[in-house]
Every structure is written in C-alpha cells, then in structure tokens.
Length: 133
Image (cartoon, rainbow, N blue to C red; front, side, top):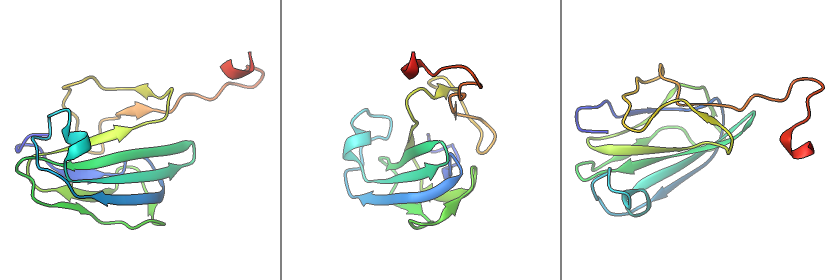
C-alpha cells in the first residue's frame, strides 16, 4: 500500500481469532521483499470453519504504529475492521493450499468489496477427493 491508500485492515474470513503475535523489527520500505521478515509486524491467525487463515500487518518506512483491536478468543466477521497501520504499510495474507486466488499482483482492491481468494469447493456427493483416488 502507498501513503495514498486507506490503511484500515479487515478480517479476511469469519472465525475465531486463534492467535495474535507482535514482533518488533525494522522499518524498511514495505514493498521490499525482506520487509515481510524483518519489519515490525503483527501476525494474526483466524480459525475459520474451513481452515486457518493468517495475515500480517507489516510496518513500512513511514509507518510508526500498527494497531490491532481484537484479542485472541474474539469472534471475527469477514470484512470487520480489525486494525490500522499508520502511513506506508503492507498486509500479507496466507490462505490454505488449494485456495483459488482471485486477484493479480498490482491489482487495486476495495476494502470489504474485492474478494481476494475463494475456498476450494468440496467434492460433490459421490465424487472422490483427489487424495482418495
């Protein structure tokens, strides 16, 4: 995200806030590859009915504060405001293997309107899963 984007963060899925961990770190430019590992960040894990989804709020070169409101055990609704990163920042979203990614790199998204990924469809009755073949 650039300084011109809205930096309010929303829950990517509905579920139970399973874990929240704060990690102090550097303030590299958020678009830098190593920012995901070295910058100040919050790692949030949501236990959704179909699996766990994790995301990171990552501070950038201008960001001086990351805010995350809920605490572990809270029930989150998809699209609910959960935090904010002040100024230049980044959010990484980690989805389960097999999820269908709905956006492309560099695509502009709109909060609570643009779908980012979709759960893999469950096999229909009588159809075997790939693992059972």
